[in-house]
Each structure stands twice: as structure tokens, then as C-alpha cells.
Image (cartoon, rainbow, N blue to C red; front, side, top):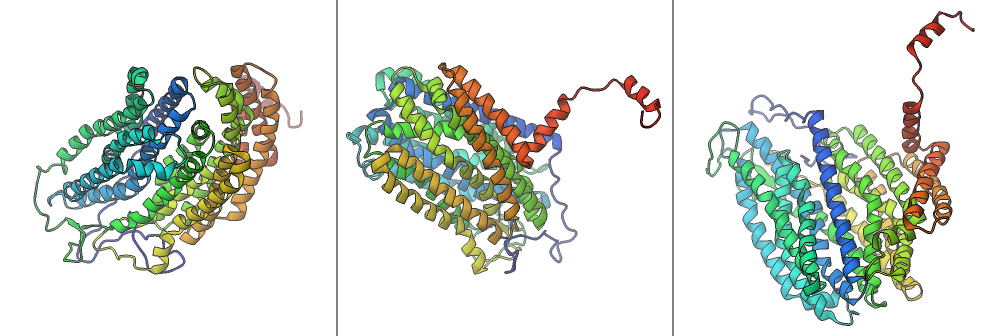
Length: 594
């Protein structure tokens, strides 16, 4: 957990806890999971995440096959904005940053005083009813305000009635998404990762089932119904595991329902136990604001794209979905290593945190730049291979491929933001003990909002570029605005980490990234030429991708990029023939120099 410290150069970095006077011996920290357990959890999460991404790609393929890119898909994608915004806010970023530390600290309080009323149950009783009521009201408001929301998001739609209908259907997702995010946070705090990792598998299975059964009867409305059904499956998947963990209670104690005089939940300014769990819900505001502001990039695209020819929003959507595949591996790296960064920051070890963040920035950049080079070199063949069937024709393939190539310029920045925002917000005190000093430092509170300010500036770049470029370049102008805006945000956040107290060696980081960018640029040029030699989409993709991979490895090694040179040398050593032990022994008997 994180706590506030007095103003200083490293004011954002919490210090290790010590026992309070009169508390007796300091409680031993909760033992870290064994390496084997962490590896297993990572493996399960990676497999289920890949399965969810694969099913999501299949969903997009079916949407392209059944409906192509037209006014109907544009209407659905405007409605898709609701779950697309709710997912990062209620499942991933905001809910996770608030509730994972809260449940983790409640578990620590349970271990410190197992005879007291269970703080985990008290936390649930204090937060879940309010969450359900708030989410229910928000879902109802979204459904009732669907006409105004559609007009705000896409005022240029020729027939907004279909978008309004789909929006009202997808408004249902707000409640189950929030429940799924809450339950997933609780389970992860209990070191239960399988069910939370499977929620997107359940979501996409629900969409696919409804889409396959009803697309011929309901048209694109079947996709909206599938989104709603999938969200219910997400929450349903987690209810059982959550209830089982909640009913178990503290080890070796019976279920209790006391009010908690020794351990409890404190939210006001009244008397608090030293072991009480104090929530600071206002700390959620910068996280939520950052998430929503980042999502505004999509709002801008759909708003400006609604004035362009029908199908433009769909081309942007398909291009974004394909482009994001290049980011998945890079984001997964920082997701796995984030606990290491958070542990170092909690211990006040700035050097370890800095080293880990720098390594993550380099590794994520290398992986994403390799994927970006492949996409830019093979975009036409990749889109043709994935989407060109049914109602999705050659014109749609060409338009989507062009957008992918422009989008790709912003992919490295997207990945770097994913790396940097985790350690930044891990220092935002969303939960603390009652006996921890509350952070009232104005500089710290101001820095909590730095990512939001960075996103607003980046959004301004996106809007300005889009307004200037869209009249002449259409969808390509929108994609260019997205890439320019998100790159500006990444540059600002890189400086923000230093302000936050993590002393990144910027010259070293930027120098390493420059070598990776040079290697990716050279690999893209070679891969583009090779991909153009084959007319078959599959063969073109294979030739271009293989050329890009080999060129990136060779150029990265030659330029001295550590993130490329290390793996290449490791592979070379692994492929080096093993010498016969007898031969080695005979050579050892020879005189020196022979």
C-alpha cells in the first residue's frame, strides 16, 4: 500500500511501515508468493488474455463479414462507445487502482487481528451497495439519454435512430461491468487470478453466440444484444468465486457480523481505531479523469468521422483493432512486472523502481516497434487476410490498410503510456490505515492530476490536427491526429515520472529508444519491399513479417540496442553446436599454444 510523506524531493514515495508505539511487535509482512506460483498465475493470465483477444478478433471478423463497413456498422460503433468507455473505467484502470489496494489492506488487517470482525466483509458491506446503486442509476441515465448521447458523439449520422436503439441496449453493460471490476479486484487481492483473467473470454463468447444466432433476424442490433449478454456473463463468472472467498472469512474463525471496535472501516473524521481501514475515495478522481480523457481520443475520431462518407468510422475501428494487436505483448510485459515496481516504491527503493521502469520502457518499446514495423510493411495483406470476405470488399481493405499505417506511428507512445501510468498512479493514495499520516502536501495533490493535464494537452493536439487534416485527408487525418496527440502525452508523462520522484535517466532511455526506432524504420522499408513480391495475402504476410523480424534483429544488434542484442545473442548461444566432451578433454591435454 502507499502512504503520504512530508514534502521532499521524494515526497511521493512511501516509506516502509513500522510498528506503532504500544502495538507490540511489528507484524511480519505478508510473504510474497512463491516464484512458481507467480509463473503459474502469469501463464494462466497470458493464455486466457490471448484467448479473449482471439475471440475479440473473431468477433470483429464476423462483424465485417456480416455487415461490412456501412451506416449500420457506424451506428453500432457509436453505441459501442458506451462499453468501450465503461470497460477501462469500471474494470481495468479506475476500479482496479481503487479496490485492489483496499482489499489488500483489508486482508492485512484481518491477519493482524484475526479475532476482530472481518474487515473484508466490512469493506464489502460499506462499498458494494453504494456501487450497485450508483451503477444502476448511471445505466438508466445512459439509456434515457441515448438520443442526446448519439447526437453528441456522432452528429453527422444520416439515420441516428439505429444508433439510439443500439446505445440503449449497450447501456445495460454499465452495471455488470462495474460489478465484474469490483469482484475481479477482490479476487486478485486474494491471489485468485483464473476467473478474473477469463472475463473477456466470457464476454466475447456471449457476443459471438448472439451474433451467430440472430444476425440474420436483427441485423447489427444482434451485436448490441451480444455485448449486453456478454457483460452479464462476465459478472456471473466472478460471483461464485467471490462468494466462496467471502464466506471463508478469516482463517480459523467463524463468520462474524460485528460492528468492529478494534478493526473497522473509517471514512469520516470521528474516532478511528489505529488498525482501521480509511478509504480516500476522492483519490479516484484523477484516475477516472485520466481514463475518460484518454477515451476522448475515440470520441473525437467518431465525432469528426461522422461527417465523412459512410463507412469511415468502421474503417477507423477495424484499423484500431488490428493495430492494438501489436501493443498486446508490450502491455502484458508491464502488467506482469508492475507488482515489482509497486513493491520497490512501497519500500522507498527508488533505484530498484527506476531500473525496473527503465527496463520495462525498453522492452515494451522493442516489442511494440517490431509489431509496428510488421503492420506498416504488411498492412494490405493483413487486412485482406483477416477481413476481405462477404460485405467487406477490396475498397474497404485499401482504406483500412492506409489508416493502419498512419495509426502505427502512435503505437509506441500508446505502449509507453501503459508502462508509465502504472508506477505513477501506484503512488496515488486511494487507501491507507488510520494511523498512517494523511498526505496533505499541496504539491503531491497537484501531481496527482498531472496525467490528466497531459492527456488534455494531447487531446488538444489530436483535435487541432484532426480539424486541419480531415478536410483534405479524411480518415487518414483523424489517424494522424490520434498518433500526434498520444505521442505528445507520452513525452509529457516521461517528464512527469521524474517529477513524481522516480529519477529516470532520460538520456539513456531516449538514446535506447532512438536505436530501436532506427532499427524498426529500416526493417519496415525492407519488409514492405518483400511483401510486395507476393500477390497472395498469406504468402505476402509471411514473407514481409519474416523479413521485418530478421532485419529488426540484425539492425538492432548492429546499432547496440540492448533489448534486441541480448535476445539475439542468447539465441545464437543456444544454437551454437555443443562440443563433444571427449574432444574438449583431448584439447586440454595439448601443450599451450598448439
